[in-house]
Length: 203
Image 1 (cartoon, one colour):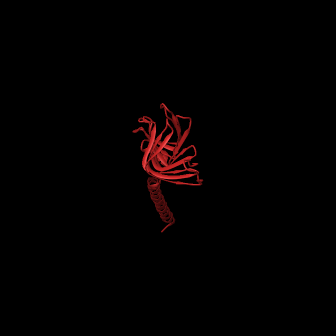
Image 2 (cartoon, one colour; image 1 turned 180 degrees about the horizontal axis):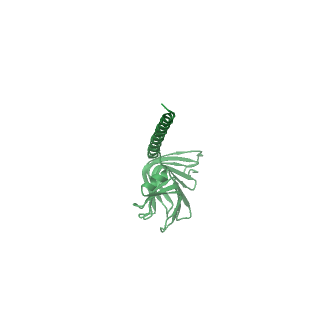
Image 3 (spheres, rainbow, N blue to C red; image 1 turned 60 degrees about the vertical axis):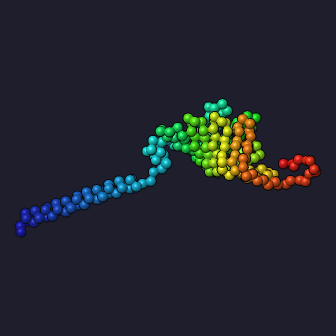
């Protein structure tokens, strides 16, 4: 084998090695690209991404005021609006009602739903109603602008500084600022002093 043949053999070997390197690089690039695509397909999306893909919009620190005869205000940690529906899903809503006698009624819940077309709002989970020095708790509540009344058929508890009361069903009239627990009412009094015959208990 002469010098020319030796040079030719080395050139062929180097070309072969270079070809192998290029092929390996191409294969690795394909595998890497496939892995990235699969990762993106399986990657979790946040609530905003999911809402956008479903034709919905998420709003943080949502605020709403009703246009009714007796206005009320609503605040929520966030709200999800849908293009296909007038109903708005709420997280940690707080509603403030202006009573007909100058008082304010505060209603909070874990979740809720606002129906703008029907002027209705509902609260679900850990519902709390604060009025003056009274605190009512229940599992759900529904309010209608048409009736100007909130109501529930669930178990209700009332706590004050001198009274603990349970019952089933509640009616809350906003104009009259009147709250009625309808059925199975049981009460327990605290710090009650003895009074004479015909006198009222100091509640």
